[in-house]
Image (cartoon, rainbow, N blue to C red):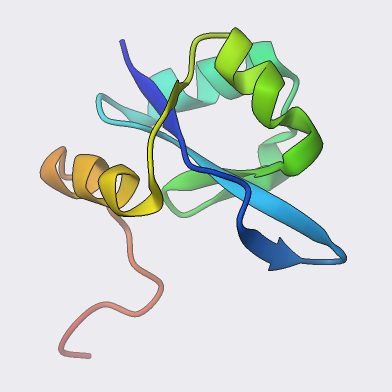
Length: 89
């Protein structure tokens, strides 16, 4: 079981955000997010948006801190990447 989080470098709604992903399954990701107290509405396609003030909470709960490119590589390699706009269409 591994859940990953990237640094809170993504701006939105007056805050900075991280992305929380799993390289195993969405079930694992949802379970981790629930234990963290992240609302289900924070799930977007293939990740949870986590506000910067919860980043350290996620790491303490067991999320592995990685860079954004590494995070995308891991979920892509796992077949769990769901881009906003599918290629070719």
